[in-house]
Image 1: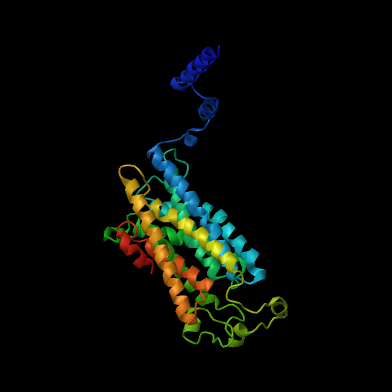
Image 2 (image 1 turned 30 degrees about the vertical axis):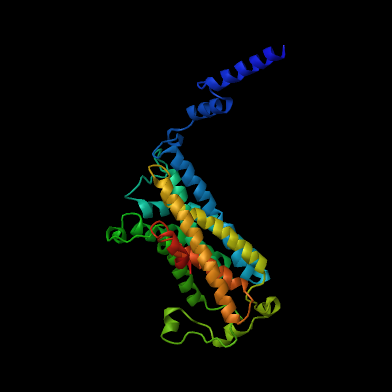
Length: 356
């Protein structure tokens, strides 16, 4: 009787395995929902299903980099600005996605892909991944302007970065613009994403000036640069708090208040970059899986070279065996950014040197 029961069980299991045409309950529900959907909501395949899954998964990991930026930036900020930094990074995502959806994606790729926001042929996987790059470029400003600019002006700057400045850069390099036509290659956005965000942050800080109390001997811009950057304040304004409210909330500056938080944010960014660079293949079919693997390996090796270089630099600067956390983490992030442009074409032994 035991053998008979086992035989019945095996036949039943094989019957389920061989019945490949049977529609599962979840699939049946999905089919019924799609039958009732509007035409513009129906799926439209313009990529291999494996490529779509790869792009969307990688883009989700890239968007997760917002948490790494938030942790890293708030580790440097004054305690009364930490929540402000976190909120700015969250709204970078919330407001930026609307700007990129409505007009940013069209500016970047209007003549190379179908960009109709209500079109059934809209390449949602490509749009999703491109937005993850856009929000990375925009969030660089939040750390540079921490404690320097009010909340709503920052949101205006972030919206302009995501919806206008970055899309113009992406169009020039990836969207059929004149740089691409000249042969300019930036595989994963070392210049297109990170340099654009860094230049925006640099110009913004030159306009806003340093954090109050950061540099006791700071001198404000003199003419004609004061006209260029709109400088209206005296030297003393930046050296010590003058307003009664500023004096009440002022906390003496420290370079890094939360080193553990800074390290954790760097770990999150490292994991994010291991998606950022490989995602730029936009495919794992037709042999691109090997390109993706090479990009992943060179990215990690560049980060390793940068970390070792940052450690050596810190020990040389302190003339001891002490390794400072900010110098180590800045080196790792710098190495990751350097690898973006060339991660698919450099040999593996050269990758640590790129990071270094």
